[in-house]
Image 1 (cartoon, helix red, strand yellow):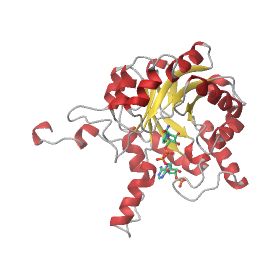
Image 2 (cartoon, rainbow, N blue to C red):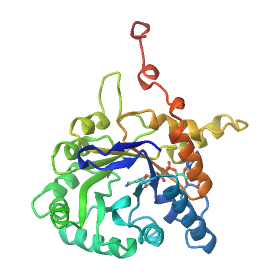
Image 3 (cartoon, rainbow, N blue to C red):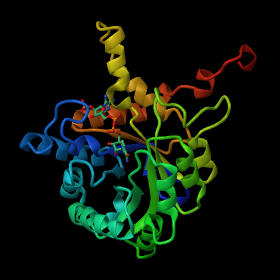
Length: 289
Ligand SMILES: NC(=O)c1ccc[n+]([C@@H]2O[C@H](COP(=O)([O-])OP(=O)(O)OC[C@H]3O[C@@H](n4cnc5c(N)ncnc54)[C@H](OP(=O)(O)O)[C@@H]3O)[C@@H](O)[C@H]2O)c1
């Protein structure tokens, strides 16, 4: 397993990160019941396999199945030496007291007395929402208090977008880390040809950078099925490898539900020769070659 420094947090983390959405959300991407005994058992084994194979970065959220993903994480990771893993969770946009309540619930489910990284659970931030988050007595201030108290070692935010609010958060100086949606079909965070994008801005600010949805949450595969119904090529590994190929992405989060998926993604992460040259991919002029 490849390990990197997670930006200004200074923490050393595995390049492959365990994404917890798929474990907790009912029918996420494909039919799935996170509450069945069989799913729970397989999910536990997936987490155990990840630990055995050297994954140290684990990302979850209270929103994933109304606490189900955090509870599953707590079952397996709760008893570990807390320094062994980099455990990240989130809190949906709320007010100061809402942050405190959310984290209290997360810690119970995760069976820990602190989380390593607490992130604002983004989706889309309108300018108004971003202003509220950064305003005095707002969400960012609550997160800074939790950081000062050691309840969250680091704080950050997640964003599906490459919009103005994401750039404002990157530049505000209050966050240690960011989690951005970046994959083969959503490449705006990294436009090396211009150059432009939130990945480049986050790198400039020294933030720890995680990416979400490397296998495109199934969208690329569905598109292929629409235009070439008989195409049975497994594009998954290439999609995941595409994100590993970006050196600005410290941690590639991938949603994994089974030990087989974990083993597959660890093999992709370890296949350094399979990485591609993204600058060559974006080359637009023969003169650049
Ligand atoms: N904070 C936020 O707003 C936010 C939003 C999205 C994601 N995230 C984080 O990022 C993580 C990853 O995103 P995601 O889970 O939404 O989507 P994803 O990683 O794009 O998709 C997860 C699904 O991809 C499949 N998969 C995994 N590895 C594969 C491979 N090598 N080849 C083909 N398919 C593969 C798995 O399907 P099977 O079930 O068939 O194995 C899994 O359920 C999340 O779990 C979460 O931690 C955060």
